[in-house]
Image 1 (cartoon, rainbow, N blue to C red):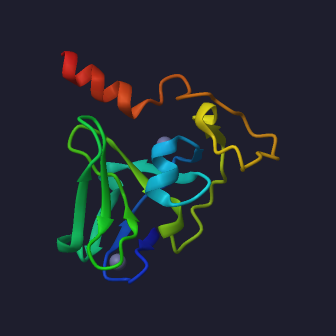
Image 2: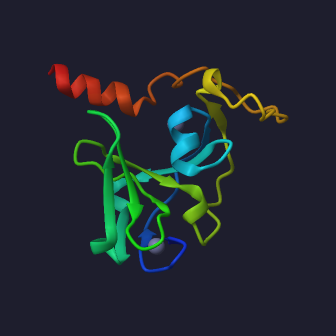
Image 3: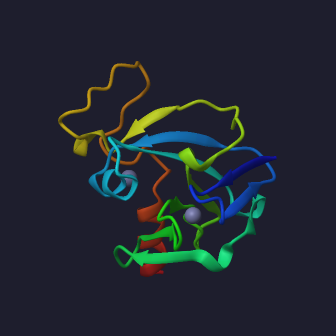
Amino acid sequence: MIRGACLCDRVAFEVRGAIAELQNCHCSECRKAYGAAFGTVAVCAKSDFEYVRGSELVRRFVQSERVNRYFCDSCGSPLPMVEEWDPLVGIPAGLLEDDPEVRISSHIFVGSKAPWWEITDDLPQHDAWPEGGNMNERADDLKTK
Ligand SMILES: [Zn+2]
Ligand SMILES: [Zn+2]
């Protein structure tokens, strides 16, 4: 089990399974939402994810028709993206309190990377979403169906 919590510790969750993947997202939206050079997102199955404390403090910002951002009403920490249509949950990796045991596998949206951040590792880089991993495209698919 992997535990996570926000900065004020009033919102907490557990992942009762494995973290499938860790990715650094360099898109301008994640950079702003995380207030950082990039957002590191831990992906898990929604069926493994559960809030154990403070779910009443989870607030939503509707970023676009396709994307919601969640944050703690008390401390403002970004919170996991749990969506009805998505079988996966994207967790801001900084919230994790246990070692997810996987390591960062790739950089995505490198096309919109901050000019002041240099990627110095040898991990794969994708200008946008890698094949088959696209939450936004999946949302578009649902809309057109
Ligand atoms: Zn909080
Ligand atoms: Zn992003």
